Image (cartoon, rainbow over all chains, first blue to last red; front, top):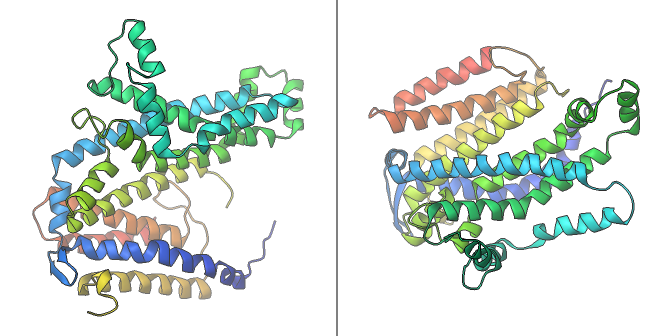
Amino acid sequence: MNRTEHPRAWWLVLPVLLVVAFSALIPLMTVVNYSVQDIFGPGQRVFVGSEWFREILRDSRLHAAFGRQLMFSASILMIEIPLGVALALAMPTRGIGVSFTLVILALPLLVPWNVVGTIWQIFGRADIGLGGALLRALGSDYNYAQNAADAWVTLLVMDVWHWTSLVALLGYAGLRAIPEACYQAAHIDGASRFAIFRHVELPKLRGVLTIALLLRLMDSFVIYTEPFVLTGGGPGNATTFLSQYLTKMAVGQFDLGPAAAFSLIYFLVILALCFVLFSFMTAGDER
Amino acid sequence: MSDFEWMAWTAPTAAFFLGIAGLLIGMTVWQRFSPTRLQRGLLPIATTRGDRLFIGLLASAFLHLAWLGLTPWSPLIALGLSALLLVSVMRFG
């Protein structure tokens, strides 16, 4: 089908462009400016070129935080995407159960991030928390404040609890949009349940799953509040992710130059990851 | 102190952003007179001219980061290599 392009339609995008300019572009340009200078105070700054970038790129603590960040994002994506799709497939399609399930699934999404951290901080404690006390009663010496593995498991479970619903709701919307005729054709061909999932449902879900994957990837890559409240980055540095490291540098130590260089590297990594993922998942789509 | 002091402008960063703005304006004019088409080159995906510019700029940014992180040499060499990379991606990507 031939589509007509109206160049004047771009004017309609102008208001958004202005908002983005003030909320994103100007701060980004400021960060770029900071990244090449040593900022001592208002009006007191020295141009240092690429020195902060060299320093940040060779910082072993940053390499470790980056590794932890990649591991965290990969882990939650590998759990949340398949689990969300499975939940979407298991959800009722008609009757009162639909509303009930949708409300139950939406509940974790409504909880603010700092509250999620607090909920799991208390839940995991062996003295006053249900989860921690239960594990202790079962003979486990679970302690997320002292054991790095326990802290990681608690963080992963917390994130899965908080965000799998998003994938499930998106997946459910995608599944409901598949025309009944596709299922009927599959039945006539004698397709098994797995074959229907593999060749009918999964391809049709690609669009919503791309959105879910990108949202979860970006969100998990900039995770800050929940680990900050739950473990404070500990024990040691076991759960210190990039954003916590950056906040410590920018707000704690007020090292604006290195923090700006770090922010830009962080931004480029997220941009590249999302671009590669988006291109991979939309390859073959009509444009 | 000027009104823009809080943005802490420097001559090199101003030149950088003016360069990017110039590229975008140039691409817009080019698009106006000769609209781009999806094409498949050396890159594994079909791209428009704008896609190739984005890929070229992103790759240049990572080339600079790799240069600064792995070598002790001047970033100006990386800038030259990036210009070559950008032209190659635009032409053959």
